[in-house]
Image (cartoon, rainbow, N blue to C red; front, side, top):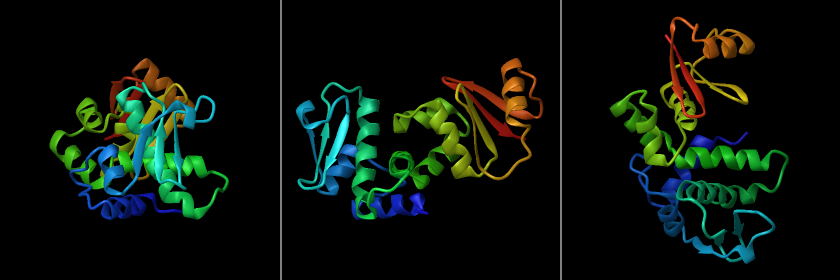
Length: 195
């Protein structure tokens, strides 16, 4: 299995960028020699972005919101990085995982987390990320046992913890009866930290 944290650091190194103070994806692409162009005619169907390896160009659909455009760029940079591995089952999911880490590299996120603590808006804002994404990254980077509850279920990050069964956790978060944990309601769900 690919170590996406190490791959993130290698890509930042190749771009000659400090992952503790990372620029956005446009700057990373530029430093990697990847051209970013806007032309919907170069995209298939409703696709929002595509990497063309023959020209080393990322094509973007014009008119995307800035957060969406940035996320698409991170994803296509991940595609570029993983292209030598070939197309295998789970490739898109792996690209999403790498893009997520490229967007919020561990050293930079750790620095912000140390400065602001579990303040989800302050953690999400520098990366144009959602509160849910910031909550997930919090658990990964700090190691604090974290459960992120959304309409699609529960995702766990951080050190192992004896969480209630998923159905019970969902119910107790919904009714506000999960005692002994820090429960922060955020846009898109809740971030639960073990105490």
